Length: 357
Image (cartoon, rainbow, N blue to C red; front, side, top):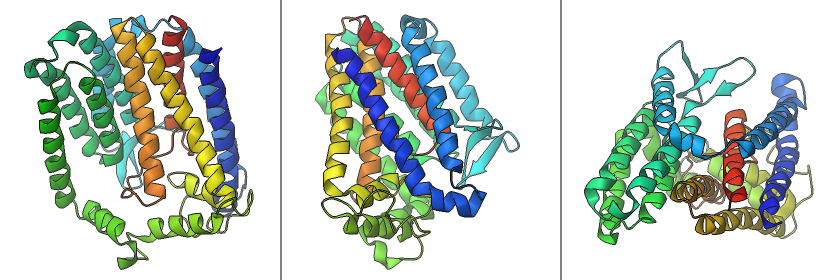
């Protein structure tokens, strides 16, 4: 019964997300597409397709991914390279991160993240007791670094950061010595600082995070409008579909900042209850990873859950002003086809693993 609760929680989050996609987007959709239901219909279609994929992947033996882990990784690397080629990859929001497939756009970085988790899970399953030596950790770290570099060429810092954090969680949970964890942490901080200094728009995001009112009509605009949405929500919110900020104040509210509209309409209590749904989902999945006797399956659950969980925490942190704006969406809730489909596939993979426990 506990295993099926995972699917139930996912369905509840999906329904809330679909409802909020409508609430947050119908005014913008009417103006931009002359169809108030434009984003709702597309998200609903992706949700149905994603649930079908969840069911299919829940039936596929997860050991198949271990058998073809290297091939999956190579194909995903090729996709990351192809998307950088003008005429093949398309530009959205200043990033060349998408393939145009007509009905929807495919983001190869989402595919690479799960491919890398599969590869690292396979690697750890074969070298678990050797991971206490630094040289055995270098291979997955190098592969991760190459993938991060290709993602940064798009550029898409948010996706790359989430990917690196999830892989580091997996490595930390091996016999990896703590002193190396500290070393990697310091190296990561230095690398992030250098990347911020090398790109003026990233530096603007940091200064906007520290004081968004320094540039209220530029880099600080989204953060300010998000806080203006959260404030009136109070304890119980202003009520469903009563948000003011979605009236052309908060740009594209159905994507990165959908949780700000949710807090405005359902308030602090609604926000806490919603976060508890995510927390229950992640804690339950981590508990199942400890019950799995197969190292590959266990680390596959850890990697996927860490990735979805870290992305969730970053998005929520950005919305309430705890982190700089990253462009990271809220899993299972924000509008976006590739993200929703890949996340539901990942849930299907997790469910296939826990069924075997």
